[in-house]
Image 1 (cartoon, rainbow, N blue to C red):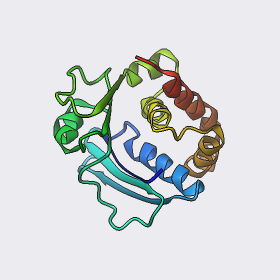
Image 2: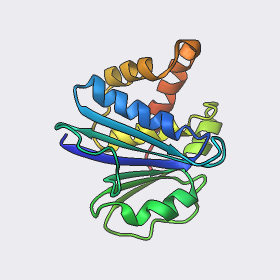
Image 3: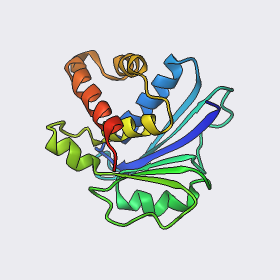
Image 4: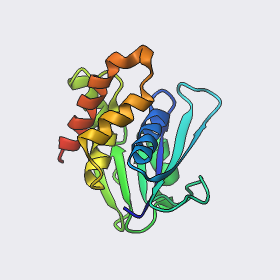
Length: 179
């Protein structure tokens, strides 16, 4: 696997921090070294939210991701802000329901996935974040049903245990999506 520096960004309330925490727990369960560093604006809902996630075979020195290998942009301000920071050869996954413009760079792999629309069309509520997580895991070759289930057990509280199957459905939908 080596090291993956990921940055998830969007509006508060889109599940940015949850998606990042899920990826971190999945790495932890699979015996990887991980770091998860959340950041959000003054408002939890509607303000900007982002999180840095590092998953590595070796110890993580700093939790800050300034130049991500992978950017997940769930809104236009996030794409505008972080597009240029992605390393050449990196990957950008954009929610094309909310981001109408195309990525200007040609030195990164780009995936446009209408995650918000797919969540709505498939009655998956606000799980556009997990649809994108499914696409991300599929594209980096880290998709495994066993890892998904174990990570969801860690990040979904007992109070919301009924949400596990819905989250799995969203992840599977994202993994199966092709442009």
